[in-house]
Image 1: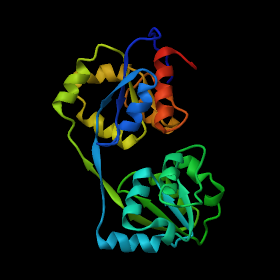
Image 2: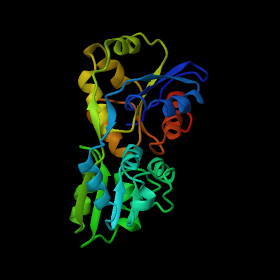
Image 3: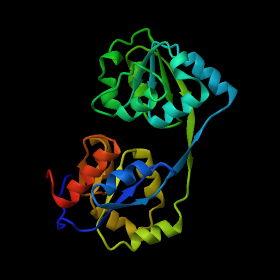
Image 4: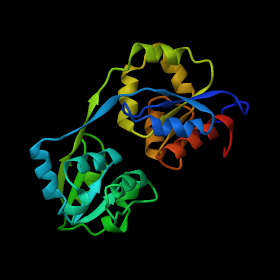
Length: 260
């Protein structure tokens, strides 16, 4: 549901980030360009895997017909294990532009990435159309992106999964909830991960739940907006994509009516 806020232009406001611990700065900078202050609420931290077994699995996976990276974190973690530009012989596919940029920073020249930066967009790429009998490697973390794995197998491919990092759950500190409860300016929740949203909602104090459900929420995809609606959020808006600038622009528009 897309409802309009009634906030005068120029009003101070907050952007609530659910990014992993240590990964809030890009959204913080993007929000600042629209006059927002960011409150970080991390559901987990990302921990790269460095064991020899994972490195060996990755080396074998990089020779697959298609090598799919599901996030910038997956690209970065894989690059810590092996020089990707030297070992990747298959067609490399990224779930979005942020992931593609992470691969290019490691010297990878050719990356297929969708304009629609989500699982559906990736699966619609021509490179992902003819998969019968092919080997497809999913470079990722435990949990998430189940649609990609299921669809790859449904298209007749042999799926290889390599978890190159993991999400270590965090307890949101009481002081963070206290800060959010004390906010006097309007706030917008930015959601680019359904798992992150659900993890944070599990810890959300009852005293804040109704307030969060009424305040604007911007989602990186229609699927995430539907998930938020199922969790009781009544003022959702779909951003142009998951990039920090896209989420910040949608959050500003949700609060100040621009583009409504």
